[in-house]
Length: 566
Image 1 (cartoon, rainbow, N blue to C red):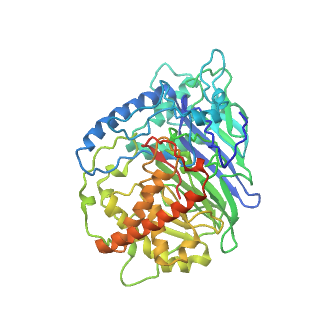
Image 2 (spheres, rainbow, N blue to C red):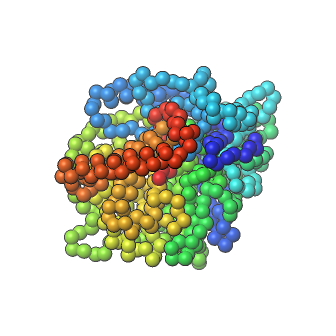
Image 3 (cartoon, one colour):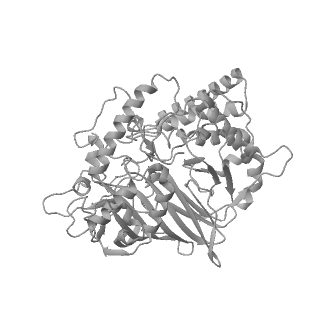
């Protein structure tokens, strides 16, 4: 389906047919080439067909409803989180309610197929339904549709996971002794549903399967907004290969990444989070229902540092002279829009040695009510959750690092580096457990279009926050930290507007910043009232200069997970 959109007025089309099949895990193996301004390599998708995840979704919703009834009696329970989608993406065909935190009496606006009704947007991409709702229509072959643009897809093949040593443990049916499509799909079904306490083993098997040989090329086609893949004879999602490898490369003009130079004049590339999310970085499923985990190996020249939105603080591995490899992973299912990468000649900024101790290990706030909240049972899909980890609930300051171009390291030492510990501690004193286990902060190039952007485990900040004194730096830092809860860990199921997460983050930046400064209650209230007054006046000015159609909000359905937020 080839359609031309007006970026100022049209929503980004979500083409992936998530009602039939979901990507559960991505394995990326990429090379970054600054000379050609191209990222190329392979991505392996591990899929789960619709019949299985529909049953899982019903179980999650039943557990969610039960837990929400209990939560109402606890006063201030820890939030139970399920990952979301980018604020700039909206699907008229939100297939399921599985990503929601259920509330008692919440009205389900979906039809019998799980599609949310939004006639206004559906009319804008009506032609996409013929492509995206591809299931088993008579003798037609099943079509896997992925969100994709500005990519050169070179080859698509099925992965022979049955050839990987040790995978026989995932075959439940003794009669499946001959290697077949059914056997390979059964292996993937068992692999993607391993319990959360076996996540290390699961990642290892994903990596080994991703390196297995191909066992047949698949037919594919591309248009402006999607990649369509099919296999001859596979008429349903159940019959379609559940592990596929896509060979591709990005284009220099691709809209998911920006190739530029940092403030020291050195080349770099980073994901911008808009206007097309990550579909110009790798083929993916972008609707909010498509939450997945991932692992990535990225190779670049040895002089570059690769930062990503992974759980681990990766260190480079030298492959050969002049080339290093970086490996990241996540075990918390999140939408593809939250995937973030930045490659450049970044310098890690560290505090000057001082006798008062390492600020990163200090706990400037005394234990509060947040420290004594119970560790309950979360109602989301199973993964290694920090909210069920007793030690994580009392971790006021998560491990953090700061990276910047070499010319800005001094400014970061003077202002930013000293503010991170008190701001993280203030956030914990208000909201409790940090949703993510670590934080990298990167000062991005001068062409970055906003003051900041939050992603899982990593935050982009503009150089502008370094020149406005501790107040500008501190408030912006608090704002992006707040997005870890509101925007990333908790968001909107039907995310038509940014105002929900931005509203919470704007409110909490004042609360966090007052706590970080250790202001007296009266002084904190006066500061918050002043900032609220300034925001109100700015809003009034914007309303006077905005067209009427831009002042109307579409009703959002709260609950779920999101992507990158400013």
